[in-house]
Length: 388
Ligand SMILES: Nc1nc2c(ncn2[C@@H]2O[C@H](COP(=O)(O)OP(=O)(O)OP(=O)(O)O)[C@@H](O)[C@H]2O)c(=O)[nH]1
Ligand SMILES: [Mg+2]
Image (cartoon, rainbow, N blue to C red; front, side, top):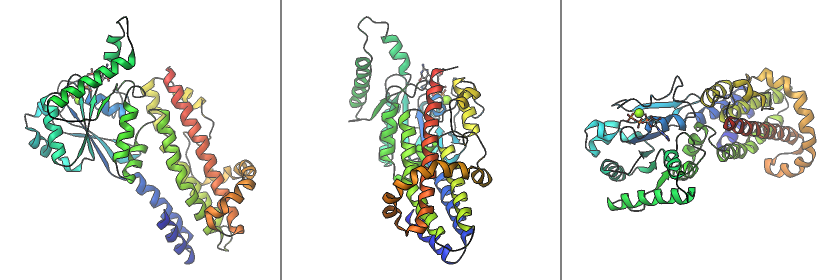
């Protein structure tokens, strides 16, 4: 971000505000194009394809879904990408047992180098193939995580017993996986209990946290934004990631305001608003196609999803013209914020007072967009949980 600001300053010195806008756009595109490759592997029928779909927030019946419940669906790795983040691929791999390869050849066959990490899924105990694969992955200095799938089934079965307690049941399964793996030579394995039908329950959040921590920072954002809003924590994280960039955009706007050319500052601000608003709407899955996919998966009618949102940016086209039209309304909303914020922000944005006003206005507008869209994402998420 700091590099971007100095480049933009340079463009402005050369009286080229169009180049400055192009640079900001390019930076937003680059973020959307960070490659991340996630390998999902495990024995036949363990729930790989279902997990791939759930992770991407689509239903098994969706057009772009990985086919599920087909015996030995495929012998070749198949990448599935997020439409807004085409370089984030979740790979549905063939089970090692179905390929007849030993673990090291299996890894070569699937092209292990490209994967950022491996998720090894089992719906029962982790067996020899899972363990051999994990050991081979470790040799290749790649990361792996064990997912014990279909936990909803275990909970349902345990629920029939008199003294049922969910936490105790989960602890018992976790411990037994742990011991199985230990017996086969894997010490302190990382095991997560997951139901692909209910990713907001059990260990999925913990798995997600762990993946994020293990990834380098730029990949962490790629993972975050390509993940659908599985829980409120993810929405909060997306908001924080967006928030951390607003002060830079504000200072860009202030730099542009400092050049004495009529109209340039507004044009730049409007372009900046459109770029970031689009990032927010897509990042939160509030664009039309994401909402349609969510509606297909949860069977909550599309218009019911829309009905719980407040921002006019949701599911709409976000162009510079739309932003221009919104300016008078935004000026009203953000003027109230401006006075008290101004004093606090000038040292952060670090500019002289006259140019500071533009920076502060943008700061307020972007925060306003972000706040309302994050709230809308939360409302849509909550609505989607309640079903049709
Ligand atoms: N209850 C429950 N069933 C699941 C879950 N995940 C998968 N299943 C079911 O398990 C069956 C197999 O799931 P798939 O996702 O097709 O398994 P796979 O590992 O891709 O199988 P192959 O492609 O044949 O190797 C399907 O009937 C799924 O609906 C889950 O979390 N809970
Ligand atoms: Mg499959």
